[in-house]
Each structure stands twice: as C-alpha cells, then as structure tokens.
Image (cartoon, rainbow, N blue to C red):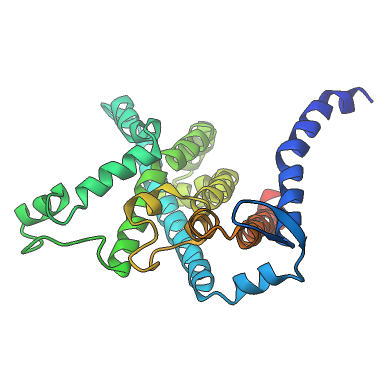
Length: 286
C-alpha cells in the first residue's frame, strides 16, 4: 500500500496531463465544431471522412514518414560517428565537446530563423559561400521549390538533432567498462573487432532510447518547416503537424484538426509500444 501512495501523485498528474486531453480530443473528433469552438452533436464520423478524403492530408502523412525516417536515420549515423570521436582521448577534447553541444542550448526557433537568413536567395551567406568555393555559378533560391526546400529542411533537421543524440551516445560510451577492451586487446582483438563485438551490443539500450525519443521529437517537429516555408510552396513541404495547424487555426476546422491530432497520438503510441516490444524480445537485451 505504501508504494502505491508514493506513486499516486504521479499517476494523478499523468492522468490530468495525458488522459483528460485525449478524452476531450476523442469527444471533439466525433462532433461538429464551429469555427469559434462551439461543440454540437455527433456527426456520424464526418470529420474522419473529411480528413481521409483530403489529398493534402494523404500527402502530408507520406511526407511525415519520409521526414521522420531521413532525419532520425541521418542524425543517428552522424551522432554515432561524432560520439565515437569525442570519446577518444585527444588534446582539446573538452572544447570540442562544448562546441558540439553548444547549439543545443539555443532555441530551435532561433536556429531556424538564422538558417532562413542563410538560405535567402539574394542576400543569404550560403549562396555567397558556395559561389566563393566555385560550387555554384549564381544564387540559388533554396526555398522556392518543394523538393529543394524539403531536402534543405531534412539537412537542417539532422544538424539541429545531432547535439542531443550525441549526448545520449557519449553517456553510453563513457559507461562502458574499460577492462573489457583491455582484455580483448590482450587477446589480439583489433579496434574493429572490439567495436563490433563489445561497443555495438552494449550500446544497444542507448540506441533504442535515441531512436524512440528522436522519432517522437522529429515527427512532431513544427518550427523548422513553419519558419522556413509555412508548408509551402503550395503545401509541398507540409507534414502532419503543419497541416494540423493550418486546418485548426487558419481554416477553423477544429473537428478535423482533432482527428489529425488523434491519429498522430495513436501512431506515436503504437510505434513506441511496438518498438519496445521488439527490443524486449531481442535475446541480446534480455
């Protein structure tokens, strides 16, 4: 009984923060809602029909999947390499760690505003730098077309996600027992063999944490796309979270917005549950 009393405040707080909003979301998604938020009777799943038949929703959903996969995948690869380098002993390692972590202390919105200035087609310093290096012949309007803008957004998403992920990996690498590596090297194991048979298996829990947290953060990431293009041009860079914002606060379709929010919540909950279940079945993590 005593342990239950200890966790009871946390359970009540969680229920207030999570369960109540989800219940309200379900109620709103099943009813007709006016532009001013007045909720009326049930509407026979009309909000769901409207959302699923909207081609903009379908395109935003597909784009959200690509956005999440590419940003998370690129981030994990880059952060793993950086963490391995920063885990080695070399002169100036402390300064290098601070430099890598420094962008994490800056607001994501502020970083994106800086990138928007850099990507300006006429006065951006990225064009100036590339021209000085002889890579491009003239200014490029990076955010004028959907394909170019979305590619740039993915690269920015990777860059801003690296500090957080590198921190997770560095924490894991610093906790690995050094005597295992010493014993392996005394047996003649190479660096690659130590990495493959010791580092990779023992880092698996930290990789799992990084995957789950990054998927949740990136899938719901709003500032990068909204500040750079607001989902444009012509909705070609919209992901679900920007599509949700538009139908809720620009078009006043609060019932349909509730449906999109509910779908995003269910998707992330199912992903986290499925992934953790698969990981728990892995004998290496048993």
